[in-house]
Image 1 (cartoon, helix red, strand yellow):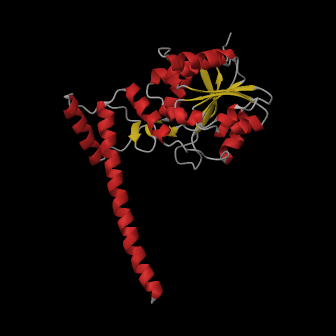
Image 2 (cartoon, helix red, strand yellow):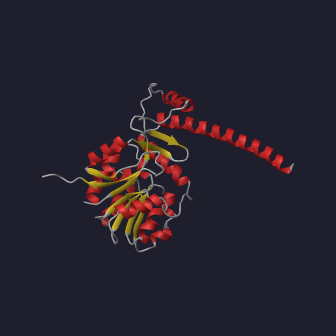
Image 3 (cartoon, rainbow, N blue to C red):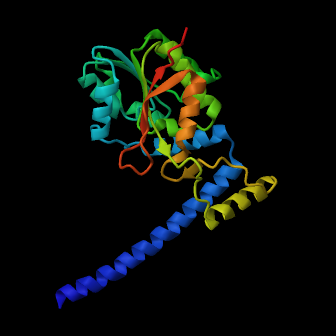
Length: 286
Protein backbone atom coordinates (compact mmCIF):
# COMPACT_ATOMS: atom_id res chain seq x y z
CA UNK A 1 0.00 0.00 0.00
CA UNK A 2 2.80 2.38 0.93
CA UNK A 3 4.67 1.64 -2.32
CA UNK A 4 1.54 2.38 -4.35
CA UNK A 5 1.18 5.75 -2.61
CA UNK A 6 4.84 6.61 -3.27
CA UNK A 7 4.44 5.53 -6.91
CA UNK A 8 1.39 7.76 -7.33
CA UNK A 9 3.21 10.74 -5.79
CA UNK A 10 6.25 10.17 -8.02
CA UNK A 11 4.05 10.02 -11.10
CA UNK A 12 2.53 13.38 -10.23
CA UNK A 13 5.87 14.94 -9.31
CA UNK A 14 7.62 13.76 -12.46
CA UNK A 15 4.76 14.92 -14.67
CA UNK A 16 4.98 18.32 -12.98
CA UNK A 17 8.76 18.38 -13.45
CA UNK A 18 8.37 17.52 -17.14
CA UNK A 19 5.75 20.27 -17.59
CA UNK A 20 7.83 23.00 -15.94
CA UNK A 21 10.97 21.84 -17.75
CA UNK A 22 9.14 22.19 -21.05
CA UNK A 23 7.97 25.70 -20.14
CA UNK A 24 11.50 26.75 -19.15
CA UNK A 25 12.78 25.38 -22.45
CA UNK A 26 10.21 27.46 -24.32
CA UNK A 27 11.24 30.54 -22.34
CA UNK A 28 14.90 29.82 -23.18
CA UNK A 29 14.05 29.59 -26.90
CA UNK A 30 11.98 32.80 -26.70
CA UNK A 31 14.84 34.72 -25.06
CA UNK A 32 17.28 33.21 -27.55
CA UNK A 33 15.26 34.63 -30.43
CA UNK A 34 15.15 38.06 -28.78
CA UNK A 35 18.90 38.07 -28.10
CA UNK A 36 19.82 36.97 -31.61
CA UNK A 37 17.64 39.61 -33.27
CA UNK A 38 18.48 42.53 -30.96
CA UNK A 39 22.14 42.12 -29.94
CA UNK A 40 25.22 42.44 -32.14
CA UNK A 41 28.20 40.06 -32.16
CA UNK A 42 30.13 41.96 -29.49
CA UNK A 43 27.09 41.91 -27.22
CA UNK A 44 26.65 38.16 -27.79
CA UNK A 45 30.22 37.74 -26.52
CA UNK A 46 29.60 40.03 -23.54
CA UNK A 47 26.40 38.15 -22.67
CA UNK A 48 28.21 34.80 -22.83
CA UNK A 49 31.03 35.98 -20.55
CA UNK A 50 28.42 37.30 -18.09
CA UNK A 51 26.53 33.99 -18.05
CA UNK A 52 29.68 31.98 -17.37
CA UNK A 53 31.00 34.51 -14.87
CA UNK A 54 27.71 34.34 -12.95
CA UNK A 55 28.41 30.62 -12.59
CA UNK A 56 31.51 31.37 -10.52
CA UNK A 57 31.68 27.83 -9.19
CA UNK A 58 31.74 26.35 -12.70
CA UNK A 59 34.35 23.64 -12.57
CA UNK A 60 34.93 20.04 -13.54
CA UNK A 61 37.70 18.03 -11.96
CA UNK A 62 40.09 16.18 -14.24
CA UNK A 63 39.97 15.48 -17.95
CA UNK A 64 37.60 13.40 -20.03
CA UNK A 65 39.07 10.17 -21.39
CA UNK A 66 38.93 11.53 -24.93
CA UNK A 67 40.95 14.58 -23.80
CA UNK A 68 43.63 12.43 -22.15
CA UNK A 69 44.05 10.42 -25.35
CA UNK A 70 43.95 13.54 -27.51
CA UNK A 71 46.58 15.40 -25.46
CA UNK A 72 48.86 12.36 -25.40
CA UNK A 73 48.68 11.99 -29.19
CA UNK A 74 48.77 15.65 -30.25
CA UNK A 75 50.87 17.60 -27.75
CA UNK A 76 54.68 17.71 -28.07
CA UNK A 77 56.62 15.89 -25.33
CA UNK A 78 57.08 17.78 -22.07
CA UNK A 79 58.68 19.95 -20.92
CA UNK A 80 57.34 22.70 -23.09
CA UNK A 81 55.29 25.89 -22.96
CA UNK A 82 51.58 25.87 -23.80
CA UNK A 83 49.14 28.74 -24.30
CA UNK A 84 45.61 27.91 -23.08
CA UNK A 85 42.66 30.11 -24.08
CA UNK A 86 39.16 29.85 -22.63
CA UNK A 87 40.78 28.18 -19.62
CA UNK A 88 37.79 28.45 -17.26
CA UNK A 89 38.90 27.78 -13.70
CA UNK A 90 41.98 25.84 -14.79
CA UNK A 91 40.80 22.30 -15.43
CA UNK A 92 43.11 21.73 -18.40
CA UNK A 93 45.85 23.93 -16.93
CA UNK A 94 46.07 21.77 -13.80
CA UNK A 95 46.47 18.61 -15.88
CA UNK A 96 49.05 20.15 -18.22
CA UNK A 97 51.17 21.26 -15.25
CA UNK A 98 51.04 17.72 -13.87
CA UNK A 99 52.23 16.50 -17.28
CA UNK A 100 55.32 18.70 -16.91
CA UNK A 101 54.40 21.72 -19.05
CA UNK A 102 54.62 25.43 -18.32
CA UNK A 103 51.34 27.20 -19.02
CA UNK A 104 50.09 30.69 -19.83
CA UNK A 105 46.28 30.82 -19.59
CA UNK A 106 43.45 33.30 -20.03
CA UNK A 107 39.66 33.40 -19.78
CA UNK A 108 37.10 36.20 -20.34
CA UNK A 109 35.15 35.51 -17.12
CA UNK A 110 36.59 37.62 -14.30
CA UNK A 111 35.18 35.33 -11.58
CA UNK A 112 36.87 32.31 -13.14
CA UNK A 113 40.28 33.98 -13.17
CA UNK A 114 39.86 35.18 -9.57
CA UNK A 115 39.17 31.56 -8.55
CA UNK A 116 42.59 30.42 -9.79
CA UNK A 117 44.77 32.15 -7.17
CA UNK A 118 46.21 28.86 -5.86
CA UNK A 119 46.94 27.72 -9.39
CA UNK A 120 48.62 31.04 -10.22
CA UNK A 121 50.93 30.50 -7.25
CA UNK A 122 52.54 27.48 -8.91
CA UNK A 123 55.81 28.17 -10.72
CA UNK A 124 54.70 26.23 -13.81
CA UNK A 125 51.65 28.48 -14.20
CA UNK A 126 53.48 31.42 -15.74
CA UNK A 127 50.34 33.56 -15.94
CA UNK A 128 46.55 33.26 -15.68
CA UNK A 129 44.85 36.49 -16.78
CA UNK A 130 41.51 37.84 -17.92
CA UNK A 131 40.92 38.21 -21.64
CA UNK A 132 39.01 36.83 -24.62
CA UNK A 133 39.82 35.60 -28.10
CA UNK A 134 38.41 38.86 -29.43
CA UNK A 135 40.95 40.74 -27.28
CA UNK A 136 43.76 38.98 -29.14
CA UNK A 137 42.48 40.38 -32.43
CA UNK A 138 41.19 43.80 -31.38
CA UNK A 139 43.56 45.73 -29.12
CA UNK A 140 41.03 48.36 -28.08
CA UNK A 141 40.92 48.02 -24.30
CA UNK A 142 43.17 47.85 -21.27
CA UNK A 143 42.18 44.21 -20.79
CA UNK A 144 43.26 43.40 -24.34
CA UNK A 145 46.56 45.25 -23.94
CA UNK A 146 47.38 43.45 -20.69
CA UNK A 147 46.45 40.11 -22.22
CA UNK A 148 48.69 40.51 -25.26
CA UNK A 149 51.56 41.89 -23.17
CA UNK A 150 51.39 38.78 -20.99
CA UNK A 151 51.09 36.37 -23.92
CA UNK A 152 53.98 37.96 -25.85
CA UNK A 153 56.19 38.06 -22.74
CA UNK A 154 56.23 34.25 -22.67
CA UNK A 155 56.19 33.50 -26.41
CA UNK A 156 56.96 31.43 -28.40
CA UNK A 157 54.81 28.46 -27.42
CA UNK A 158 55.21 24.77 -28.19
CA UNK A 159 51.45 24.29 -28.54
CA UNK A 160 48.16 26.17 -28.23
CA UNK A 161 45.07 24.69 -26.59
CA UNK A 162 41.64 26.28 -26.77
CA UNK A 163 39.79 25.17 -23.60
CA UNK A 164 36.86 22.76 -23.71
CA UNK A 165 34.39 24.02 -26.34
CA UNK A 166 35.58 27.61 -26.03
CA UNK A 167 36.14 28.05 -29.78
CA UNK A 168 32.38 27.60 -30.18
CA UNK A 169 31.76 30.91 -28.38
CA UNK A 170 33.61 33.06 -30.95
CA UNK A 171 30.84 34.96 -32.69
CA UNK A 172 32.49 36.04 -35.96
CA UNK A 173 34.32 33.99 -38.58
CA UNK A 174 36.86 36.80 -39.02
CA UNK A 175 37.81 36.42 -35.35
CA UNK A 176 37.84 32.61 -35.61
CA UNK A 177 40.31 32.84 -38.48
CA UNK A 178 42.24 35.76 -36.96
CA UNK A 179 42.91 33.93 -33.70
CA UNK A 180 44.34 30.96 -35.60
CA UNK A 181 46.47 33.29 -37.73
CA UNK A 182 47.83 34.82 -34.52
CA UNK A 183 48.74 31.31 -33.34
CA UNK A 184 51.02 30.92 -36.36
CA UNK A 185 53.06 33.81 -34.96
CA UNK A 186 52.85 32.92 -31.27
CA UNK A 187 53.52 29.20 -31.78
CA UNK A 188 55.34 28.76 -35.11
CA UNK A 189 55.31 25.20 -36.38
CA UNK A 190 53.29 24.07 -33.35
CA UNK A 191 49.95 22.24 -33.06
CA UNK A 192 46.68 23.96 -32.17
CA UNK A 193 44.13 21.84 -30.32
CA UNK A 194 40.51 22.98 -30.19
CA UNK A 195 37.04 21.54 -29.52
CA UNK A 196 33.63 22.78 -30.59
CA UNK A 197 29.97 22.01 -31.16
CA UNK A 198 29.01 20.44 -34.50
CA UNK A 199 26.11 20.07 -36.91
CA UNK A 200 25.69 18.36 -40.26
CA UNK A 201 26.99 20.16 -43.34
CA UNK A 202 23.51 21.00 -44.63
CA UNK A 203 21.63 21.40 -41.34
CA UNK A 204 20.85 24.36 -39.11
CA UNK A 205 19.83 24.96 -35.53
CA UNK A 206 16.16 24.23 -34.91
CA UNK A 207 14.11 27.43 -34.83
CA UNK A 208 11.05 26.61 -32.72
CA UNK A 209 7.87 28.66 -32.66
CA UNK A 210 8.97 30.14 -29.33
CA UNK A 211 12.30 31.16 -30.89
CA UNK A 212 10.57 32.72 -33.90
CA UNK A 213 8.25 34.63 -31.54
CA UNK A 214 11.29 35.97 -29.67
CA UNK A 215 12.92 36.95 -32.96
CA UNK A 216 9.82 38.90 -33.99
CA UNK A 217 9.62 40.60 -30.58
CA UNK A 218 13.24 41.67 -30.92
CA UNK A 219 12.68 42.98 -34.43
CA UNK A 220 9.62 44.91 -33.24
CA UNK A 221 11.50 46.44 -30.31
CA UNK A 222 14.35 47.58 -32.56
CA UNK A 223 12.16 48.38 -35.59
CA UNK A 224 14.30 46.18 -37.81
CA UNK A 225 13.14 44.49 -40.99
CA UNK A 226 11.46 41.11 -40.47
CA UNK A 227 14.09 38.95 -42.17
CA UNK A 228 15.46 35.69 -40.81
CA UNK A 229 19.06 36.44 -41.78
CA UNK A 230 20.85 34.63 -38.94
CA UNK A 231 23.67 32.14 -39.47
CA UNK A 232 22.27 28.57 -39.49
CA UNK A 233 24.90 27.45 -36.97
CA UNK A 234 24.33 30.23 -34.41
CA UNK A 235 22.47 29.74 -31.16
CA UNK A 236 22.08 31.34 -27.72
CA UNK A 237 20.98 29.58 -24.55
CA UNK A 238 20.56 30.62 -20.94
CA UNK A 239 23.11 28.07 -19.77
CA UNK A 240 25.90 28.52 -22.30
CA UNK A 241 25.30 31.91 -23.92
CA UNK A 242 26.25 32.28 -27.56
CA UNK A 243 27.56 29.24 -29.39
CA UNK A 244 28.18 28.34 -33.01
CA UNK A 245 27.55 24.80 -34.24
CA UNK A 246 30.16 24.12 -36.93
CA UNK A 247 29.77 21.90 -39.94
CA UNK A 248 32.78 19.82 -40.93
CA UNK A 249 33.06 21.96 -44.06
CA UNK A 250 33.29 25.13 -41.96
CA UNK A 251 36.11 23.71 -39.83
CA UNK A 252 38.06 22.71 -42.92
CA UNK A 253 37.57 26.14 -44.55
CA UNK A 254 38.56 28.06 -41.40
CA UNK A 255 41.71 25.98 -40.99
CA UNK A 256 42.69 26.55 -44.64
CA UNK A 257 42.06 30.32 -44.47
CA UNK A 258 44.28 30.58 -41.39
CA UNK A 259 47.12 28.56 -42.95
CA UNK A 260 46.58 25.27 -41.12
CA UNK A 261 45.96 21.65 -42.04
CA UNK A 262 43.74 19.31 -40.03
CA UNK A 263 45.90 16.51 -38.63
CA UNK A 264 43.23 14.95 -36.44
CA UNK A 265 39.78 15.01 -37.98
CA UNK A 266 36.80 16.12 -35.90
CA UNK A 267 34.41 13.21 -35.25
CA UNK A 268 30.77 13.47 -36.22
CA UNK A 269 28.38 15.35 -33.95
CA UNK A 270 26.73 12.13 -32.72
CA UNK A 271 29.80 9.92 -32.35
CA UNK A 272 29.78 9.91 -28.55
CA UNK A 273 33.00 11.95 -28.37
CA UNK A 274 33.01 15.73 -28.00
CA UNK A 275 34.03 17.10 -31.45
CA UNK A 276 37.67 18.21 -31.52
CA UNK A 277 40.55 18.61 -33.96
CA UNK A 278 44.30 19.16 -34.10
CA UNK A 279 45.72 21.67 -36.57
CA UNK A 280 49.27 21.98 -37.86
CA UNK A 281 50.68 24.79 -40.04
CA UNK A 282 50.45 23.99 -43.72
CA UNK A 283 53.58 22.56 -45.29
CA UNK A 284 54.45 24.82 -48.21
CA UNK A 285 55.38 22.99 -51.39
CA UNK A 286 58.38 24.28 -53.27
